[in-house]
Amino acid sequence: MLSRTSHAPFAPFERGETPNERTVAVAYIIAEPCIGTKDTACVDVCPVDCIHPAKGRTYDDGRPTFDETPQLYIDPTECIDCGACVPVCPVTAIFPLEDLPEKWRAYTEINASYVVGGKFQPDRFQIRRN
Ligand code: SF4
Image (cartoon, rainbow, N blue to C red; front, top):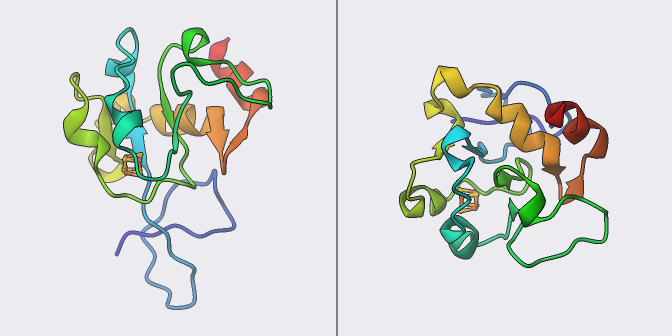
């Protein structure tokens, strides 16, 4: 079973089999093909509303909105690994972590740099923008 520990949301994802670990689904990642496209079909089908920023939505935490980001991002702690977003993406930008092409490995952190657990990560996101 793929799993990651709940105490290390930014750590590399791990394959863990320890029975006492709280296991959660492996996050999906939005990679480079989203840049310049930002099709929102994924946002519409996501059952837990963990793909941000949503078009036309404003956020109280000051995060960049849809028009201000180069791509969309999946919140790695809220994604339930359902896979619904994958087939609706017209540019094949979304991958389960285990299938993410090596050339787009950095997008794991890029996704997490925007939002984790529903919270904007301003410092991390600023680093990624520079
Ligand atoms: Fe949302 Fe499911 Fe895609 Fe995760 S895998 S971002 S829960 S639609």
